[in-house]
Amino acid sequence: MATATPLHSLREEQQIMTALLGLLKQEQQLLVAAEMEGMPAITTKKTALVTQMTLLSAQRHRALGKAGFPAAEAGMDDWIAASGSDAEAAASVWQTLLQQTREAKELNRINGMLINKQMNHTQGALQALRPASATTNNFYGPGGMSTTLPRSRGFLAG
Image (spheres, rainbow, N blue to C red):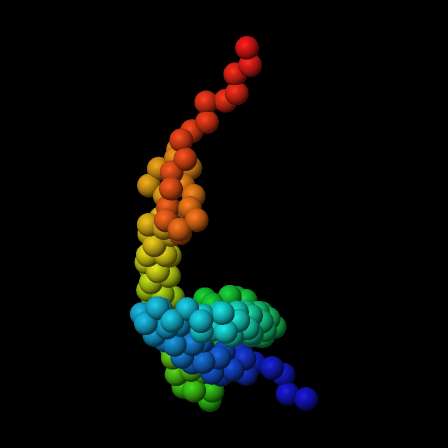
């Protein structure tokens, strides 16, 4: 059985990152269009992909460590330099993954800003629905019109 190299998980990481980028772009389209119905499904899929990425990254780090390199992102450049015939393919996939990761971080940052904007809009709409004064007691009368009841002064017994 061949020993797993960092390149094995690297290719899969790159494929998953491509899928994650697609989801982040879909999420952005939904946020811009204020179509919140599709957000839960996107969030579920994003969570699954990020979990897969985390597991694959850990697998790649273990493979780097077993090969005698730092078991972290920094070890990839050293491993690529020493990988011989796989160096060109590994460098290409690694650089693509790094570029996609930067793109995903930026999309996620923008999407976070869009989510905050949507939340502020929603809070403003909810605030507009609240009574102007919390000290008055607003009720609807029999005709459906809003009425204000005076504050009770309490019961005085003589």
